[in-house]
Length: 265
Image (cartoon, rainbow, N blue to C red; front, side, top):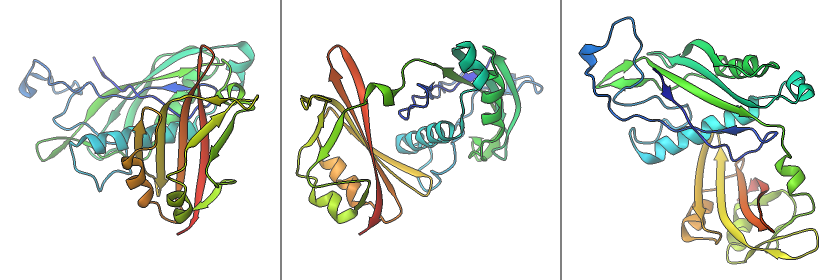
């Protein structure tokens, strides 16, 4: 038995769907019941993907940060195998691995493959992960065995679906902004228009701030909120602000992305 990691990737790469969520309910057995040769699937504190060391252990904020950092790592690192694309292979690859007491990934193994090189690619990702913050039982680091599902899909990409859509937010133009410009435009309405110029309803809005491998996020049901304003006040030069707006086009929901590089105060 292994613990499942399930996370949702908001950054689409050939509609790569990845989910990540710890099912860390305490098992019915006690630690003393575990066979010494069997690596447990549970710890009092489960491991964290790196980049969130300044956040409080056990907090929802740190777990969210860990999830998002893992999402970014996989989305940036994974390449859909050419053979799988040519053969039209789609599906979910499961990779089991152990995070040891020093946070290294070891004993990596493809638990379920779909062929076309997808298993090898998923395995490569896990083997090249940076060190995690290890799991802990009390004050002692502990090994934990995890299972990671990665779905490969060749369906129409998000870029294809959003072709012709426009992003408008006050006077902001291009992809380079300053912190002041973001704050000055905050009171303006954020508008998404389709290829005919019609304004589309935003059903979900996410603002992510990324800097030095750390990610902060604010979400809403489609409107700019005080929480998002507080997030933008933390923006610094060298960071990146990602706006993700989910809009409805007919019977289809589409995610429109706008990325701003912060170039000054």
